[in-house]
Amino acid sequence: MFKKSLLLGTTALLLAACGNEDAANTESDSASSTEEDTVIKVASHLPPMTDIVEIAGDVIEDGYSVELVEVSDNIQYNEALLNEEVDANFAQHEPFMEMFNEERDGNLVALQPIYNPIVGFYSPVYDSIEEVEDGAEVAIPSDASNEARALMILDHYELITLADGVGFEATVDDIKENPHNLTFTHVDLLNLTGSYEDGVELVFNYPTYIESIGLTPDDALILEDDDKYTFGIQVVAREDNQDSDEIQALVDAFTSQEVMDYLNELAENGHLEPAFEVSE
Image (cartoon, rainbow, N blue to C red):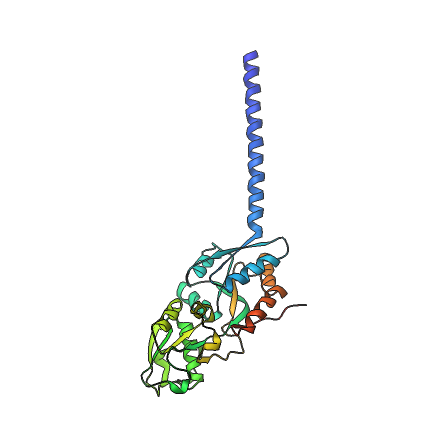
């Protein structure tokens, strides 16, 4: 009888211990889940984009925090967002995002332009477009959206003439007139600075990349004129989370006065133009 009671008592103690452990695990899992729900992961790469993500993280409200997920190329940040490894990204303009959606059957959504980088063409050879010689080599981006952007700049400055109506889908095949017989070389966006260093006569580039060799938009031969912020760098999310509270809080942080103050500092150096207004 005693042995049976002891066994039952021991069993009860074990069950109670297991119950307490399960409760503790449940509480721990719940706390962990709650913590994960308040952390917003944002993929980005290179300043000033990464700097802006960190500023947004410093000012975000409603109990959220921002985790910067740095990537090393122009593919990973969209793949990570598409695969739900991050909640948003901040590294691209809308035409580039739309091209990704087409190629990957993606569901990414551009939510808010933050700044418009001042892009243009740089030359290690010429001091003005009047000096451009026949047969000069031109390095342009290999991705479709930035290729079109580069060609539209050349068209604007009458170095080439594009076919009517091609717009943001322009390719070198749409060049109607090429009075200087320019030759075009497609180069990955991240390698365009190398083309400049190799002596290519005209090189399209972003201030983010060309800055690595000490150049700024002040050194450009010609600059883009885009007052509609068509190529503004955007906060991007997915269709399934774009209306969530955390993404709204993220957009609010990206359009804060603190971010605007930082952008205005960079704007003084001619690197960019802010693409939003701070809400009162």
